[in-house]
Figure (tube, rainbow, N blue to C red):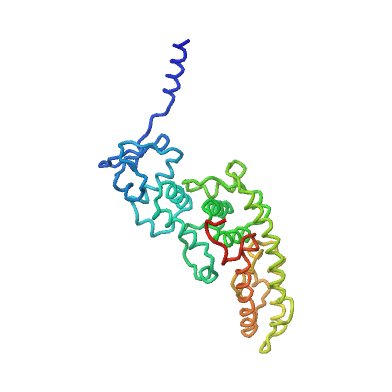
Length: 330
């Protein structure tokens, strides 16, 4: 019986995969080996110690609970810091946040958080001035925006949640969003396209709180937009007093109103935060535009609506007002 137990234990030990050296991060002058699952990285202790007070002065350290993919991201940032000046993939930002928090690498954590805050700001003027992303965008993917929201919820970045949630429901039908299962982050180039076709195979579930925020927010935002844009159904301020084509401008105003409220096209679902334009997509089919006077009048009124909508955005999605919406306090 004892021999049988020993044999089983030996067989079990022999089944453990042999740790493999990472092909990229096995430094010839490294003085510490970091083992993550079955991958080993030989790196420089001083570099780790400079970033993390939790670095250990031992020749081999096993990182329990981490993934080799996350450590590959972390080491690529430490050894190639110039990439921090460029937009980063979302999976890299997530790895920086997870490991940065776990190992008290504050500089890395704050760099990742600042990217999210920049791309999804709390102020309308910052949103309007935003011209270049610090995280590689993929607004064509509902899973991308859902992953972003999950990261915000995990790290309690509440001040970025309202505009991210708005963008999600603006770009994607509510039924698709509520059925969405958020995929795990991946380094694969084709992952963004693959997740759309394989959502049913993923494991990470969207938190119920996020579901509730989205579902209730869609209804509240629909009511808000209908009320906020109701002036488009009246003659104030279009046609303007100086209007030179009152009939055409009236037609354009009515068309804008119906496009903003009733079309199923995602580009028009919630236009209340979009900028005013006299050449909206699809208008060429109708050949109607505002005259200069009506365009100026409509633009001024619409700008007031945008500002009011931005102020209302947190409460629309079930959060406190902007002034009370603090990261890490809920």
